[in-house]
Amino acid sequence: MLEQYLHIENLKQSQAAFFLAEVFFDEIQYMLDVDLTDSLIVQNHGMNSRVSSKDILDVTTHYISTHNDYKEFVVLHLARNGIYHQLPEILFYPLVISSPSMSNREVVEAMRFNRKKERKNLNFFVPFDTALFKERVKINNRHLNFFSGSDSKRNFSHIINRILAVDLHISEHQYYQLFLHICNVKHLKENLPELQQLLKIVLDLKITLKYVPHVITELPYDAIGVGQLGVSLGLSGDFTSEVDDIEASIFFDQQINDYMYIKKIVDTVKGILSFFVLSTRDVIVSYTMSSDNNFDLGSTFLGYDTSL
Image 1 (spheres, rainbow, N blue to C red):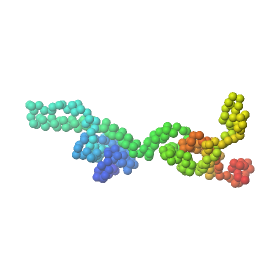
Image 2: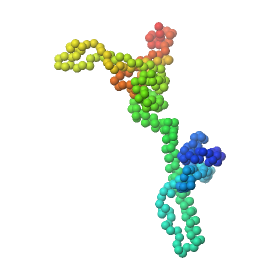
Image 3: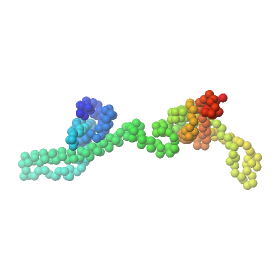
Image 4: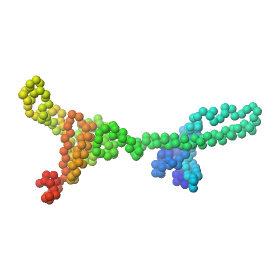
């Protein structure tokens, strides 16, 4: 039985009873690790100034018969205005329930009739109030569990992918970790020691970063008239740019024979570093891996997986 399973009497006397109803309901589901969404009924009893500081008036259970059995529901009694309370009163009651010719007994009977009619009207709107409450629970859950809820994380991953707009070969969790570091980009910009740590966290790889000179071998000068600087006007040879390149050295602690996997890692390292280094820098990625010191002719390759 839900009443004993939920320990309703203890819940009503606990501090949780002073929470907002959406938080209270979500907390019950979390503590019991059970989904009560399909076993919930919400009854709004209207605003009351005496209980305005308390959202939950009572928690009870209710049984509804089914085709061959019955189903038990948890009923949240709330000090809130439901749909019924928001509608104009004239839709449900006459402006005057008495007339000068009515006796006191007839007036009392008319008032009782109105109370019965009110209970019926309230019951009619219960499914609608319950549906709206469930939607508020979902919204509340997204706010409270934005970084932990499965649905929220999936939506958050889509948002991250749209913001980053870079195709990286990493998992959703790695995208999430990368996005958190990008939010702190001012601290990480051109900070090579911190970027090494970032790559270790996101990719779980040992990567060393360092600046290397950018050497220009192809002359960037166009011909002016009949002369071209560096060809016929006295300047020739390689020269070094003012902006250095970044060399990323990846160390694999095991032998990897899948070239496409290595290519994905190289592309991913370049993609991640593009958020944190100047766009004018080239990123040169090299890699080494632990090698097999034994030489078995026909099964190993000299210089690739065999050290001499």
